[in-house]
Image (cartoon, rainbow, N blue to C red):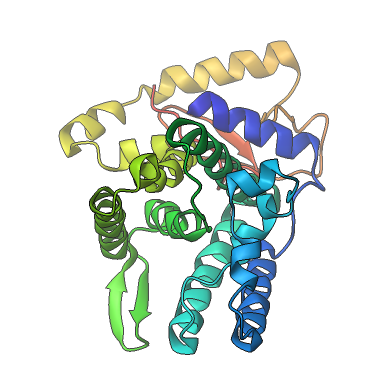
Length: 286
């Protein structure tokens, strides 16, 4: 997972313009538009033409590979508003934390894994199933809770709840969805929630693991000989002709004199990062 995230960060550094700014805003507006058109559709056929359907895609309806992310999760206007509000809040926060490039890759990876699993389930079971982006969107709660576990949100606008507790409720819903799928005879599609969880682990698995590590072990891993680390850094600075170097992208203060560098207090050892990666890197543990 750490190697995967380093490649993602390196790609985002080499392609600084990659990514969709305000990505979740497009998702929210697209979903609201589909909901509005569905409300005016007396035949109730619009959603069936937008949902992912492996058999229909193989017949040439390739737009379903993208349009399935705009299917509303509820056709009640109050429920739709609550869902869209939380998704925009969580998604836009992740985008500010990670950057547009990394967040776009996160969501696109969730779409890719969902579509791939949909085809696999179709070829194995021989049955076609409609799919939406429900679990991709819900997986963002896990990522948000991993990065900001103690952040409080107002549930129903008046009940303060920490994100880590909402994430547990989200996990319970994923388990319920899997069991419900088995009860409904959905076969392989019962495991669709696990695909979104896999995407979450690719991006946040390391952070989650070290955040739940037992306190004693965590303290031992944070024990560092700082004098030795400082001597090591000074030696590298003399031999490599720079003072600071980002551990993610490799930029130095010699090559980029106007770039701001900082040291991460959560990494084991002394590790420097540029301002673009100080808040979006995978923490060193050894």
